[in-house]
Image (cartoon, rainbow, N blue to C red; front, top):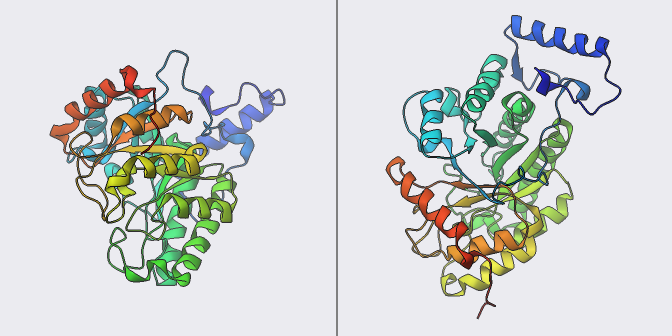
Length: 348
């Protein structure tokens, strides 16, 4: 319970403490749900969550290796978290289907939100982010409205679940698959619809005190670091950040320019990277679909750039099978501890 109350706030009184504790007790007794219709609790009743600039604990490595919880298929939330701990990892990105809900739910039972937080904390695992991906560029306005309503539910549940971050994608004009490129992705209409979605999402993220991290992805409307920079500048919200997955940045014919493209991505986005992904690719023109270390991505350069630009967040493995987890964890640890992660040679 003590974590819910800001110890540094001198204005807190015993009466305020009892008022909030009573409110939490009533909410639990009533089986309250977190939904779009439910008002957010007053700011004074919510513990301050970590911001993107929060440093790691003293003595911790600057980059923390984590994983998408859905990597561990089957079983319960508890067994998935047990598998994370057994892999020697201490942070995860949670998709709510891992807890028995739809990926983008219309409501989140308060008891479940608290249980996710408790189960993770009991194993020493921090929740780096929630997955909040839906097609923010879908050509149907009603589809986008539904996704935004559900995203608002996620934002309202972040404090109870124990994270301040939500991972997003900007989507595509494809009606059936938000990871599939569409010829209309480059149209002014697609950009207009996508930015309207992101702007609305950034506003309720501000209200909830959380951060949204969208991912530039070769098949999406925001398909490059340059477009990601444009979106950040147009929205202009401190609550909008970036998830960087370099395996998703290479258009057809660009793989030979890997160093140049990685350097440009960090030059444009380095100070706005909230989450980093770790997977791999063996060809350009599509998102990467290989486990980290199994393809052509220059991990020495990628990790050196993360360190150079002061990244202190989670490096999240995904795109791998459960059987590949030990090898990928060992691969990243070896790369992060080698001296070669520090020097950077100019791109040719």
